[in-house]
Length: 431
Ligand SMILES: *Cc1c(COP(=O)(O)O)cnc(C)c1O
Image 1 (cartoon, rainbow, N blue to C red):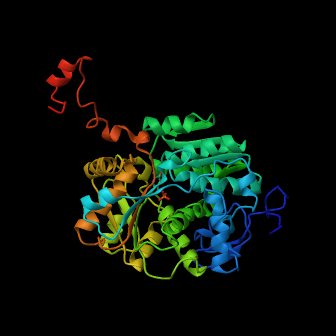
Image 2: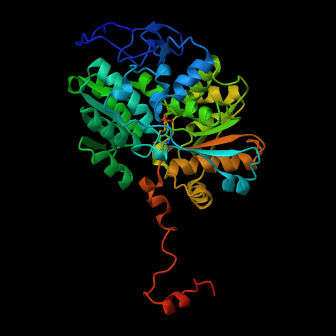
Image 3: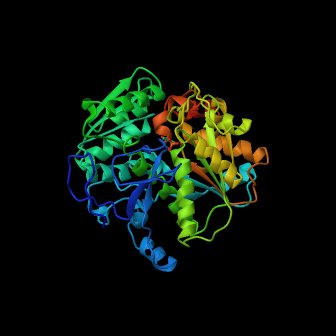
């Protein structure tokens, strides 16, 4: 257990973040003591959690994980959380279903096995519960009393719920024009919810200012000053997919991109599993998915650029509407290094894909899920995703939060008087 005090922080409580050893710069590798830092003091590169990873045999570690709880805490030895994390008041997200999507596979002509990792099954119905759960532990360790974030919608709800459960105050920030499902989900847990007149990039800029101001003192912004810890939560998606495939890497994974954090950390999680010997080391490809109306990473990928040029978002996939994605360049690296790709689809294709997933597998995903499946379909048709290989599509959120996307075309087939004559007249009986 690492016991240390944080320089420049009033709290002197012992710091226990399990196997987390330090923060290290993704660009220059410089190491820093664990603390609420997110940018390298030397080169401004993003900081990542570095670990003293478990040293036992893969068999022993696999056994320990499998004997753990049915949530992300089964991977506590690989996360920046204290060993007794499962005993604390938190929402225990994760271990969501990996659905073998045979009907969808038939429709798309996939023969190598198609799976949907359905993260709508998390406590607040999106993958954001994973990242927030880790950030809460960091907030507790650093003595923060208010939990905050800049959000495209789902994160605000996840922070509100986790703070309520943990007994922390919350104050979260969203663009003012989000879907009602997201607004209500963010407000219902009783914390403060602030709509900002602007898009997500404006919200994020505002939060960065607030961090430097006395108004934001003692606040843990899960995706800003706690971002290195927050990001680690996404690794659990990689761990779960592999464990649920029988400790095997999938050949191809398709992941939606907003800031790009999730995609980069899924790759980090897969690399760790290989390094620890928990899965066989063989090639995998990572594909990123965006909506055409907010496709800065996809545009850079297709143009062969290393830099991501910011865009002004205009898409129904609001949870992915980040025009200036912090991890964009790393997403490009990963897609290119693994032989994957980044692609985008129109809003119309997003709606079609939402309905395709619902119709074939009984899963109602949000617009982000439509983006991911839409891109999967497009890349299969283009011969970029190989239908003969095992493919996992991540559905990151719940369609109940984005009803507007499908409400025009998903209505009652008929509205009739309660009589058999009326039913017959509507032409719906067997005869
Ligand atoms: C936030 C979010 C994402 C992507 O998140 P990043 O890590 O910022 O790329 C994907 N899907 C949904 C539903 C989200 O809310």
